[in-house]
Image 1 (cartoon, rainbow, N blue to C red):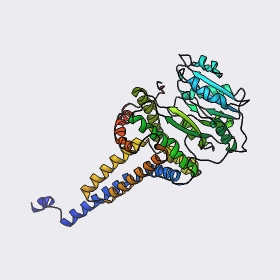
Image 2 (image 1 turned 135 degrees about the horizontal axis):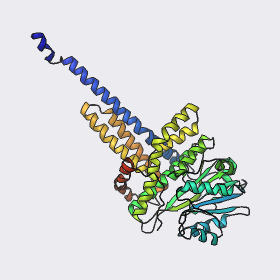
Image 3 (image 1 turned 90 degrees about the horizontal axis):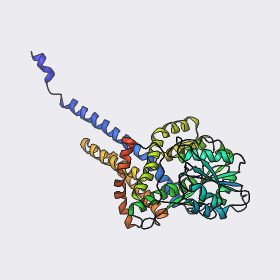
Image 4 (image 1 turned 90 degrees about the vertical axis):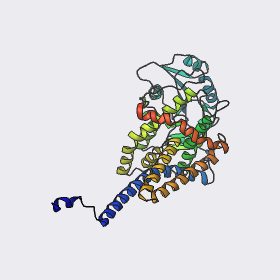
Length: 418
């Protein structure tokens, strides 16, 4: 009987202590793993912002004096853009030279987009296919029209954007000189009487499209494409698989071009300006499309992309994969906050504080990089006092990210214009 009850005797103190230590070590390693995962996008963001922001000559590229200006075709995909197409064309017309072409693809339009574009002096190709909807299909249609008389360089401009004076020349010259795709400096114009949320949104846009891209340029590395203000050598765009309803066709184009050995360059001296919508519903729709598309690319495209880059030793492809690993700025802040709370709480339970300290250092790096980016590109949109509004803006975007988990947007939806 004594032997039967011996199995219920308490564990010796030494063994009990040893088991607790093993559990604590296991938890600590898991917490370091979480910290390491969070450090990847934060480190990439910090490198881009610090290199771009601290080196002299921010936003200034070499002079294009003496570079040949190629024969250019400007391609404008447009779906029900009667309200803005005239203004967009008027900004481009003075920049055209003999031999250039301006083509508007009126894609499934139900308004006067085609008529207004023609009256403004553009060539117009109308496309009607309600089953194949999205910017990618319109671009594919336009490129096939241009193939009848190919230009040297194709410049893509969205129908609600303004190509600033001189940008067409610089985009064309860069694309011809380097024989690579080129992305101009794409920033957002604030609507009249903008809310704090619009100001923060424009600032986040500037961080992604200007501060980070400038850092990559200064390092001699490729950038992402932003969807407008893009220039392509004819042979590069003619071979792209454009016909798709991808929510972020620009990201996919950049990936495809980098895989093909033609990674995009950033040209800070070729500005193109978009306009944030004033209506809250339109702004939410626009952000949802952008951010769901980005997150979808992160989860489905980036892992195999990084694997391919490592297997093939493709440095530019590796950089692009790491750059795509950086989520939208507000989501990155959410990730850090959630991870910091989890790591600190679990670390306190097992008496392991080192991962929490590491997470604190990552927080300093993250907000230091955001602060430097604000100093370089954010002051036109946000005052120092308004930086305090960023946490509120982040909280307002929680439903967008929950929507990605519950019912993510998979089809292209046009943003309603003001």
